[in-house]
Amino acid sequence: LRRRQRQMCIRDRGNITLHNVIPKHMEPITAKLRAAGCEVEEFDDALRITRTGELRPLKLKTMPHPGFPTDMQPLMTALLTLAKGTSIVTEGIWENRFRYVDELIHMGANIQVDGQVAVIEGVKELHPAPLRATDLRAGAAMVMAALAADGASEVDETIHIERGYENIVEKLQALGADIRLSLIHISEPTRPY
Image (cartoon, rainbow, N blue to C red; front, side, top):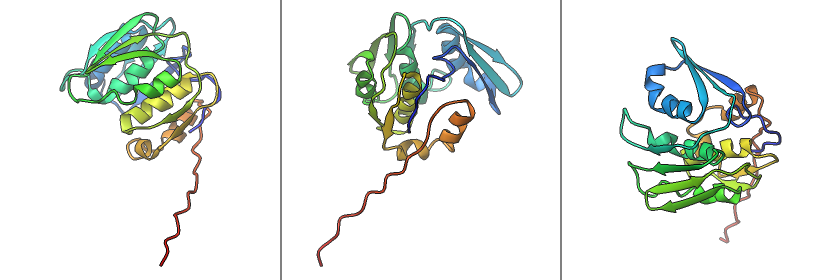
């Protein structure tokens, strides 16, 4: 996956409307987006998320439903790399959920992990880098971080992303992202008989 221009809603002070959602089910996420400085408008089956100012740092802990979902933790961590100040993310569900953090650090993020806690000191910008999707949610976070960086990034091992996000490339392109999926053919080694 590649990206060349900064066009991400929350990074670039844009807005996006999500359709076919139940806003009540999204409350743990929208509450944190509001706390981070985004405006969230709720409709019957849609949400509009707008960012107009600087991102603010957060403290969040993943918890079972109805708490903040662990599946959103990598995406929120990627977002918080650009917040002005220090954020603390505590993973309250799974062990070793911060394995993807090294990829964000390659992009210039300032993150320290101690067990189940990540301390994120926001940076002014992320830099393009070769990235690896270590799992489904972390892979989505790498795509979002790459979209926030000013320049081209490549995300390898996208199979993790594709199995959980149907048509992610096309959906992001519809939002204005300069992103594409490049298939690289790797020939199998020949076996001696």
